[in-house]
Structure formats: structure tokens, C-alpha cells
Image (tube, rainbow, N blue to C red; front, side, top):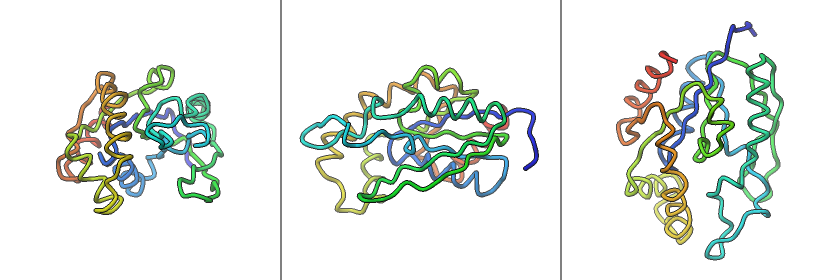
Length: 196
């Protein structure tokens, strides 16, 4: 792999269904300049999550291993390759190895990424993908199926994002309307990254 002078770290935050993962996957697929890191791969064991309305509450910043993420980001900044594992969300799934490379643009995406000050201050550019509450519900239906909308969404996922997630908008350097066509969102984000 060709050595780069300096990696630029781009944080991407937004609610469930805003298109964070899709955006990063598309950029990474189109160019070797991008590395994609998912905050979801830094979850602690769900056994440790507090309960809300009888459900394990996945929506809290305290459920994430921010120290491990910060350590991995520092290694990438130093030009080192990072060996880590993904987080299997399916019951009984086994973690798979992941290799992260110090590419020119390191995209880190996650619903609570800006909640951690150490990680937030480390980022070169912070982007918030904005989506109205009504669209969060609609996109969760598309993602998980029409019959998915359940008590977890209405009582836990959406209220917690409105409490913890939406407040992160104030930390963003750029707010992008994620309700636009996907290609327009991609073009806007690429333009932002090119200025970083």
C-alpha cells in the first residue's frame, strides 16, 4: 500500500436510516482513498446494557467502547494498520476480523460518535446527516420490513435519539439534508471532504 502523508478523519453522525453506512460504503467502494469505520463495531456486550420498557437499550453512548475507538484512530493517524473485529448484531453471530488501513480519508460513522469529547476533538471534519422524525420511522420500515415498527422503535430508539442523538448537531461543521436523493447527499459530502 502506498504511504500517505497524512490521514484526514471525517466523522459522520445522524439518526437511524439517515444513510451513514450506505454513504461510507459507496465512497469506500469507489476509491481506495477511503477507509470506513463503523462505531457499531465498538459496542460493549449487550448483556451490560440497561433496560428500558423491558428492552436492552442499544441507544446510549455508555454502551460504546470509545477508548478502544480512540486508540485505533491514534494508531491510524500514526500510519499504522489496525487489526480489530466487527460486532455481530445477529444472535449467536461470531465476530469477524477487520483490518483498517491508514488511507487518506478515514470515515468514521455512528449514531453517537460526537457524544465523546476525546473522539470529537480528534476529528478533522464533523458532518451531521439530518433527517426528520417521520422519515426515521419510514426508513426503519424500509430497512427492517413494513412490520418491523414496534415498541422498541416508538418507546426506545426514536425517543433516545431525540434525547441523545439530535443534540450532536451543534458539534457538526456541516449539516447535510439526508432527505435528499442519495446521489445528491453523496456529492455534497464528497465536496465537503475535498475541502478538509
